[in-house]
Image 1 (cartoon, rainbow, N blue to C red):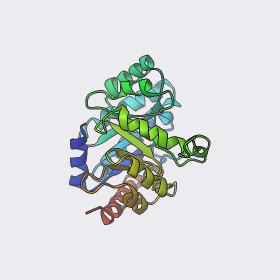
Image 2: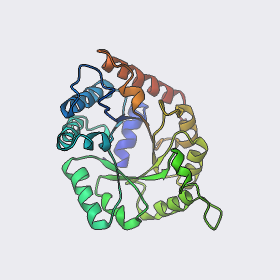
Image 3: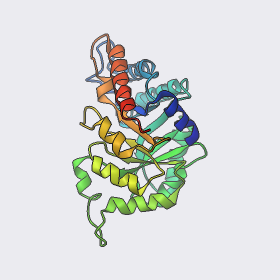
Length: 271
């Protein structure tokens, strides 16, 4: 999916909602079997229920990989189901990052064979470990500033010039690849950090996790990160939508929560 296409879908829906697919066997509604097929069925049902509101979906590969070979088959089912929604941006949340030759195979498997539009990547092996993911029509989504406690261990550490390490990483992103193929992950629970990253990377799309169950605010994210016109944001919600209900009405509850988030986005839509 091109940047122009993604921006047009965002404007048409007045939505930047990305639904994170983190299927936890212990939390899924009772009507789904506690196995890989149940995971695939649950994710596909969530996609169907929320497609009117979302512009993107983000399967977290860890929840599939933990189920072994059958989990990979379930991921392939979800990827195939997403292909029925071509106006929705698909993200493989894999956080890959390895030497160039290995990265090329990751890219072929996830972006090529499984057909995802994008993949999350980790930057700390450098430019050659990330460039293979920037294939024609595909995106790399690289870690920028995360909101987990461990972000203090490396990302926030001051370098010799007094600036934090993450700011130096962002400097590199500005020159490594076009913003038309390069997104940045910025946590929702650090609105001041989001504003700083937006100032440093005014032209990049941001993927912003942490809204909802993790405590991030749609209002704060829209104010700190949205770009007038294109918006250039995807705001992810996972648990708040997936597990809005654990009963038979799980799909309706997921749709209601997705609709609520989109309505909140519209209230803070930049003019």
